[in-house]
Image (cartoon, rainbow, N blue to C red):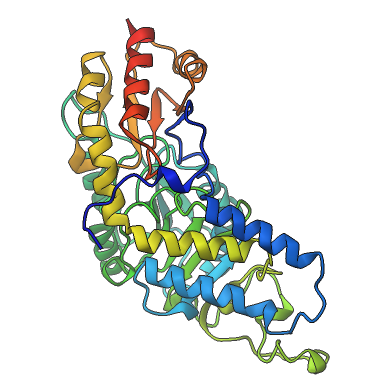
Length: 394
């Protein structure tokens, strides 16, 4: 296999005149992922002869692939979930079990985080006597790294009263990258849990569980994993062994594939993270699609995706700065999700509408445009973005 990843646009069905630079909103299905979904639906038209093991086998393969993608080394630590809010609810449901937890401690999070990573803690903080501590995005002079200062602030805010740190790999709106290895080391030094939302990174940016050592990693599958909506994957570390699941699915118990014995009610769960699987996690349409999507990602390799996206950006981001836009230096972000901060005089929503009229799809988030390329994009897509922005910012 060549180390250089080339355009994979031929594997997708995006129209030639559409410049979809918006994987951070929703990843398109490749043609093989779509075909897997069609074939699964066709099978459902005649489910005759469906064996009991079919309720488990598809998800088993998906868990193996996700474990490989994030270098977890143990598929039994992977759970199939429905959404980020589901995964974070599992964390909240088990926070009371954390050793050394005491009233007066705080949950540390960053400013302007995605709502599912914020709402999850409202009830549990009240129940356990905890507070929320938020690390704001720092203001820095133009040309300096916001991410570097933000990482320093997060590290400084982790102290003995920190019960849990909730942080993404990259900021969902602006693409700022967080040093998860350093944050994880600091969290462990004070006995805090580290919980990561990997939705906007896993699949396009390398993630190494063995190096980062998170207690939980929660990901929706429909963005950078380019899988189906309403499905996600989560890693739960040793802190969650023996914990309390969010729901009591019959499939999560021992011997649940013995259909003739299902009323021999089993109090014991399957090991490790299996108890955290959502009900009906064998989803007969989604699992074949997600299996193909993960197989593609492992073949492409997130490191090569980053290099490919860097090649798309390198010739155009400097031009955007000449239009008065502000962009985080490469050292503080990934190449798959870049926040392009517009001049103060520009209306982000109005700019997004102009881009849409030019068949360019990106997302307005706050004062920035979220530019999110992937392997199906080509230089013409970035050129169309630059041309359209030049027209509406001057």
